[in-house]
Image (cartoon, rainbow, N blue to C red; front, side, top):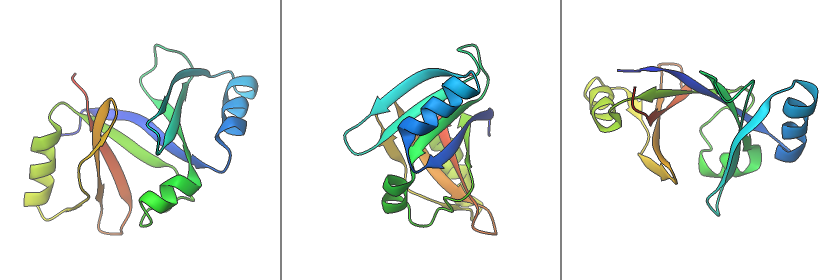
Length: 126
């Protein structure tokens, strides 16, 4: 079961310029920045006490990793307290699911609706 919408993943051509826009123009803060060697992502939000944040991803890197994604629109990242169980539930219901991927501090997988719109889910306690 999905717990909440936690992140909107925005695919950008220049992450550094996107960070400047969101922080200097919109007034958001950089919440975290991760780089696992293959991929860098930056989390920005209105404040550290946020419910939802924006993750800035490099469009070119994501296109190579997940060519099926529509990078012209943001993706939604949901959270669930039990990722493996939710993965099994969706699979048993015939939902198209991607492989579970370990992305440093979190595990995540994608799933698609009937129109091939992809969504992501990560594990996070309540």
